[in-house]
Length: 366
Image 1 (cartoon, helix red, strand yellow):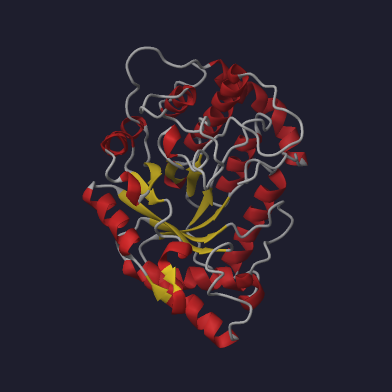
Image 2 (spheres, one colour):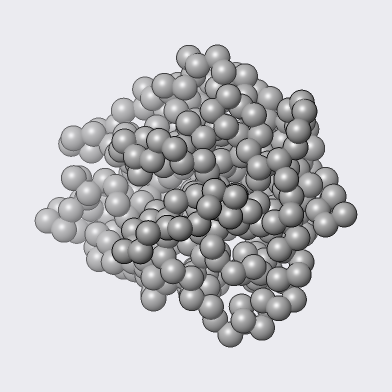
């Protein structure tokens, strides 16, 4: 995910002065000394989740941390189209089966990510594929994957990242070109509902807090899709946070999202210390970056806590420990020194951890 520069809309500007005092108090939170903080799942009044991959299942430190802190797991890669979809529109469920089975054996809720994503399946779903075959294979993919795990998944990211990068309308992709910009989304949700009717079905996207224009476009899209009959059951905000966004911006988006009345999933939380791109050197000190992390992550956690109970679906981090993050991997951002999660490599709490605990237990600002 790229860290786009934030752009405030009028509503965010009006909200900022009030939210500033409410949210910047998190910047004063300091890392807790002494023993480890209690597990997140033991203090959160809603499910806490993290991602996992098959390569981590044999890591006893990771397994112990997952058992201690979370009650929901999202397979990070194994359920994505690039892993499941094979030449000739065949399917390989070996990795996804292992992840789903492991999660359920541990007594965890399992969340499916993701059925349709603009960036995947492109070796198979092409502009050259005949129209009837394209539609049939699209339907078959969604229904087969969701149907394989019928009754075993708490929810699905049915369509991932449908809004344009900058929030100006919808994203151009092969699915939109061949089936219609909104029609492919409705179609995917209908197939998923029929295949796994008890799962909560989510529209998921990123930079919704970071770029107010994109957050507003996302919410308007949800309203249109619901009017078209799409069985959307929840909103997924990835929350790959730009820790330099103004105080109050996260709170404003969460309040606007809550107005639709649907469950909300913080689905992929991380909060990188390093900026993406940019020509100017980053002169911020480590202390300043940590303070920004604490402030923004604390604001997100308190905004989530402020939701009505029925709208707090789950609070999920994209990785559990710093060394689990996609940001440190070579195929990700290749930043071995990045620290963007709640736990360090040894499973100890990072500074933002206490801000989350304080928000979840009602001690924020006390």
